[in-house]
Length: 87
Image 1 (cartoon, rainbow, N blue to C red):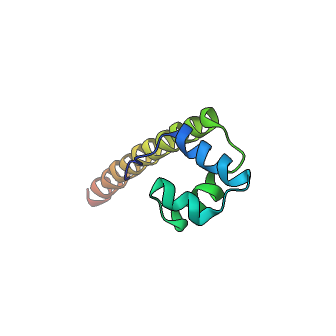
Image 2 (image 1 turned 45 degrees about the horizontal axis):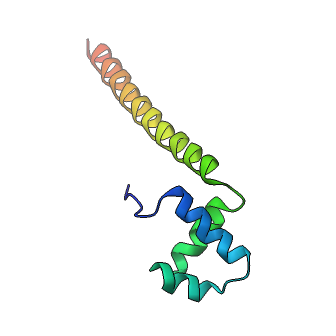
């Protein structure tokens, strides 16, 4: 996954500026982001502060790691079942 060049606190401050009434196109130009990126951040991080955002990212990373471990475990199980079935 691509790493954002913006920190959690920067994203939160950009979203707070938009909530305070700054026009979205002006914010996007000022920070060098696309409007699609802004709206994606708003849908994902709306109402969160920097601590909650970092916690969400940590949970997503842990979930990805666990999914990978589960997939590897299932692959090993399938290989063992296949080997046992041949005998």
